Amino acid sequence: MSGIIGHIAATLVTGLARAVTGVRGDWRDAAADPDGPPRIYFANHASHGDFVLVWTVLPRSLRRRTRPVAGADYWNAGPIRRFFGQRVFQAVLIDRRPEMRSGDPLAPLADAIGQGQSLILFPEGTRNLTEERLLPFKSGLYHLARMRPEALPVPVWIENLNRVMPKGELVPVPLLCTVTFGAPLPVAEGEDKNAYLARARAAMLALAPGTEAQS
Image (tube, rainbow, N blue to C red; front, top):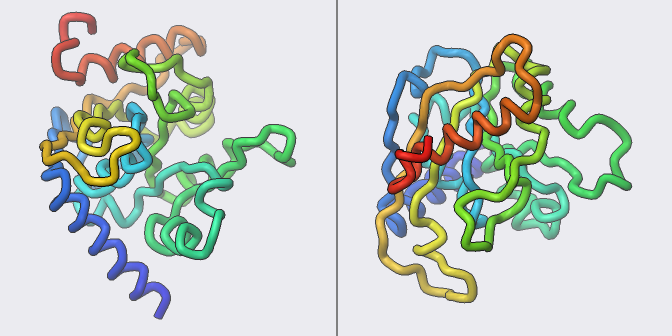
């Protein structure tokens, strides 16, 4: 029964996201292939709703095996968040407090990929509330890609959600949102962390409107 309720809730969430934002997916390669290997979708992060938009535009067959990576402190805070985090989004929760961890925080992510699931993560590590287009990337994306080379890291750019739901406003502004998916970006042979993260950041920015010339 809880699975049915979760499925119904997921349908309502994706329908509401489409109604409020008019979100559409822009696929620039074959990353939507439902029969392909797991993906690590890595995206810019400016709103709590970012992963919902990525999740919404995925083909249903991919959505069913794609899980957002999210903070346990937020999604375990109360029964409603816990229901959506666990039953609807099936989020992979990580503890953002290093002093409270007892193991490798990337282990649950690697385990999920090992089970054939894809992930949505945000390499900036927190919401970007600055005027900069991207914050510096954390190292987790690089280490996870090295741990699970069978998964394809896919850059994603989410456009406009921070303008649809600006900080401090309760009523969404009617603007269309776009989620753009780039070409997979695996770690190259012998590539170190800094080089890969710089390449991943450039690939993401290249998908943002008005910044193509910087890629």
